[in-house]
Image 1: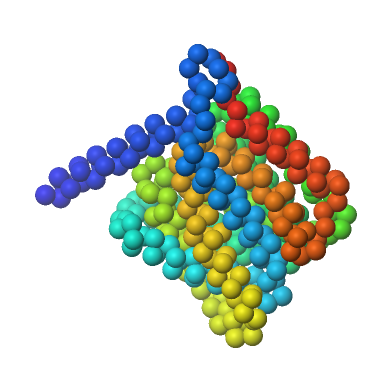
Image 2: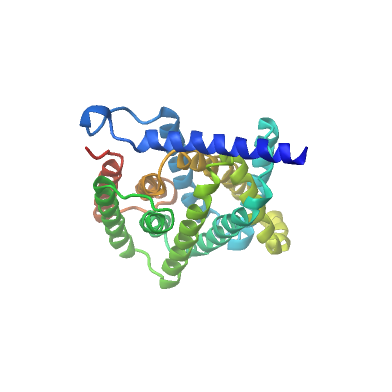
Length: 326
């Protein structure tokens, strides 16, 4: 009986992998007849990318807003606790199975790095640099992801993708130059780069998991691991919740529901249907959005140079979404 169950589970895994591979090949394949753009992106993937980008952009501004009421570790734990509750509800509603034991180590790595190290490092970094600069620094990750993906998972970099990555990175660098004139702090820069490095490794670890586990399950399990890793900050969080204004507490709840539970799930969904380099490049849209949101809500006014950098980012992302002709 155990052998039959094992065969059934393996056969289900193979079927999931086949569907995931077919979806990814559909996304990456050139159109018939040698045309450069043969058909539109899957609208569900496009929607997932849009939701992820908007929610993650808002997170940078929210973190910057509550920095005086919540310390970095306490903010990370509060966000993850809310996110874990929301994701648990999604798991229950979807009646999703727990991840198999063989994938627990990889999920643990993803959870500690992306939900733990990333959040704490970013929260501390945003105490030292403005939201727009932090977003730009974190979004060197797509370049790291593209390089690591070609080395570890043997993903292919097309000429359009490579060119788009370089253009978008140049735009991000321009944003950094424009923002650095108003905000400094080497420590903040290094912390944001550390967050980007944790983000990069976590994405490379997460990608293979999505061929056999649902995006919600992967996100839920990683969030639980990150929450456990941040539990040492619990006493401080309880104390800060007592003194924080309601508006800041609501923002922490928002960070847990929107940018964590929803956005990490939509990210995983889109990633399961694209290559890491191609999907990761879309996050270059985040820094321009963060600059605009920071301008509107925090009064951190971007300069002309930063705006020009945002425009270059958009051009680079457009290039990464093109398909090479055969």
